[in-house]
Image 1 (tube, rainbow, N blue to C red):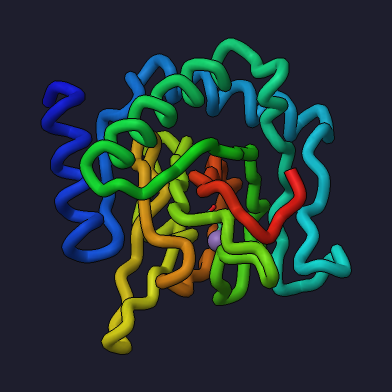
Image 2: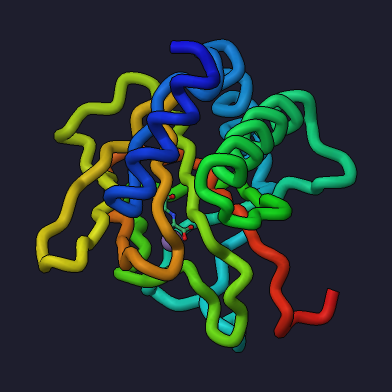
Length: 203
Ligand code: OGA
Ligand code: MN
């Protein structure tokens, strides 16, 4: 599918449902380069335990380790990712007038058994995050490996999205609570947020 149709389909589904799954944003080679880099950083213990909330307390609610992309000095694989996310962001702005001005992204690794309890991505006192985008890096993921992203819909139902390499999950940050279920193997992802200019926030 060409970019125009890929992005239009995403915009239409987002406008209707508030969330969508998009495949084909990055090539298999670009996805593998990100997976290799994330795995190497993790093996070198360069990812740090994630923190929850304004007090930055580590809790058992969240068991992943993360490393933020440095927008001033992204690696080659990260640059490729950010370029494609930016193209998507601009297309969504055109189609949906979302006013998304920037993106932030980090690597995340969940070791076997680690989870992230049900939560909303909007931070308290900060409405900058409009759209959550989670890109997955795991080749050969099986349903029996667990590790689904469970997305709770307003009607009380939920959908489970498996973290297959190349899958991008998009959802409105303010609207969908979600959780990461524990897996039986290392689970690699790039959570990313497209942000609006936030009047409440000193820039
Ligand atoms: C998050 C998150 C989901 C995932 O980092 O806020 O919900 O699948 N991550 O990595
Ligand atoms: Mn989240």
